[in-house]
Length: 95
Image 1 (cartoon, helix red, strand yellow):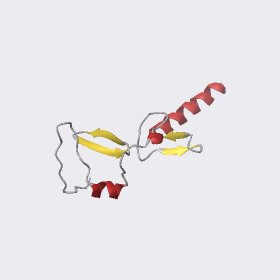
Image 2: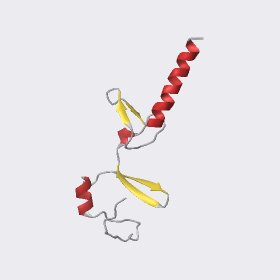
Image 3: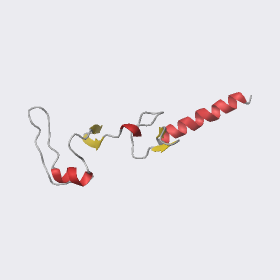
Image 4: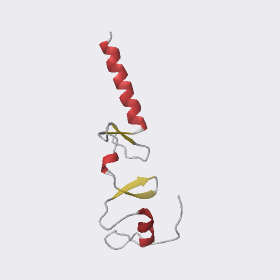
């Protein structure tokens, strides 16, 4: 994680301002949805991408892939789970 050297205070409503330099560099526009994650003691802000949640695990990650013309999103773990279930299903049919 890279420090920007920018410090902001939380206001009385619990809000902070993301500096315009950071918003510009990340392409964050006014009214863009931002997702909030907690990673240990860190708060992580990320532009919300609703279509990239794994359809099997629900996990949102940069490692997720979209297949079948964008109709199916899988994380590596979700893909492995899906492969195992498909193989088990074919094994049952072949008995």
